[in-house]
Image (cartoon, rainbow, N blue to C red; front, side, top):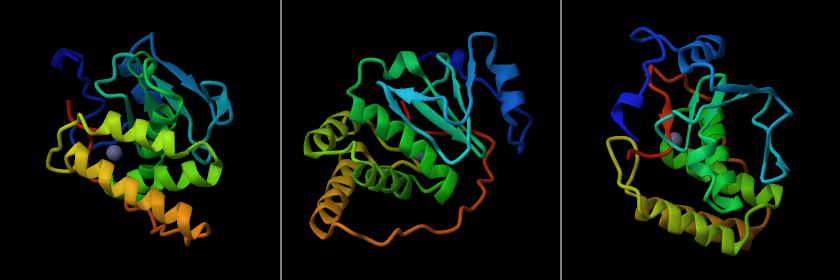
Length: 182
Ligand SMILES: [Zn+2]
């Protein structure tokens, strides 16, 4: 995506409210309320948080505290498991904070518990993520694949794990968490 598409959502150090974000994202963005979002026909939620559909967003999905962002155009060619992983990863940030690995594991745990993640889906996620590079906060894609795959196996084998959830730490960054750098 072009850098020009990148939008500053608020002043420095400020986190946008969903209303501010919608205003800045423009008329093509759409607010989907809690309980109204379905991905490939499967209802999803992230607590009570709404989702903004924004096809100008510079990643597949993103998160600001209190709401999620999905780029429907960008995720449209992906398999259902990968789409659900992306949504769940962004949802993970709402609960576990900015840590990218923890958000990945949150998504995998959710996928197993909620029944949308099987071995084929896990490999789809690995194929998708392995092409992505890392940055200061995102480990390189192949490493993310390995970490998630290992955790997936653990969940399947032990079947009944403890939720390793820590209290969410508010992010100090004004930039949305994204799935990965481009
Ligand atoms: Zn993330």
